[in-house]
Length: 352
Ligand code: OGA
Ligand code: NI
Image 1 (spheres, rainbow, N blue to C red):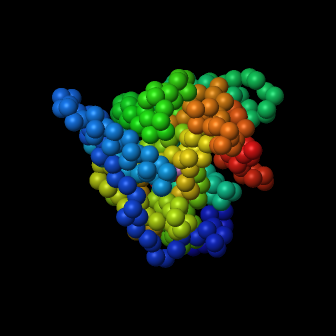
Image 2: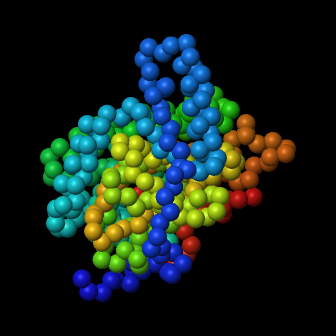
Image 3: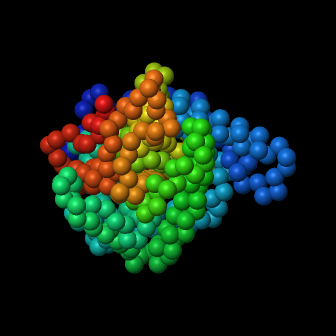
């Protein structure tokens, strides 16, 4: 297999360890109480219970898994099959729908996280088509841009499978958002308005077999910058989460048919640090390729992200200055596309 391209090599302190810790403690939350059609009188107490579980998980882990979430497994399988068929093609075919500097949707295989190249290939598409975002990251440039999805010709059902799956995941994302809102003591739909004209996108991840799994990562350590991530992973495993109690990297064991949910930076800011966005990364391995599908639930580009008034007080003043989601997102996108010499923009830059 020869030499590894040094762009992939993680510095020593960020390389995966040879032994992994299993995260037994990452909560698995059963959402069946939400889907119950003929609810009996005690169902409201089970929803109350759910809200408590979600709140605890967000506070203690920033991560949890959900089961009985209402997403049909046939719909998930269809998109998984389509994803495998797409990535199995030769690079020339995939590059026909390649991302470029003006439209960040499509195929891409040179993403960098913290300026180290990730051992993965991705295909991105947005929920809203078109999606409106700022045209540049320059603070004074008010021009907007429409991002449109690029769809490959092969496999033939790719677009249909992706769009159908997106509608289901979006429903789940709103349910989770409402539970989170309730868990913060807010009305269920308090946060929904921020997602009108959302900039959410779905990503198909493909992590090829890697001959140097001790040197490279599928995705380097990072926090998700949006509001909420809804991730499906296959049975291979590789996602690690930084445990809040001791900073240890722990593996999220694949649970069949579950979704992994994590709070992103936007919820951290809205909740004024009550719910923190937690670092995670992806290990690769030399035996099996891995596939995953995160859905990044992101607000509209117009949203100014700041601690919610209801969650701040004299005793607990806002810890962040307001920032514009659209500009933040575009700046991040550009620095993921080009290897920049500056540190990536982060929410801690807005900390008061
Ligand atoms: C991501 C991510 C995890 C995974 O794409 O932001 O964290 O398991 N992915 O692929
Ligand atoms: Ni992530």
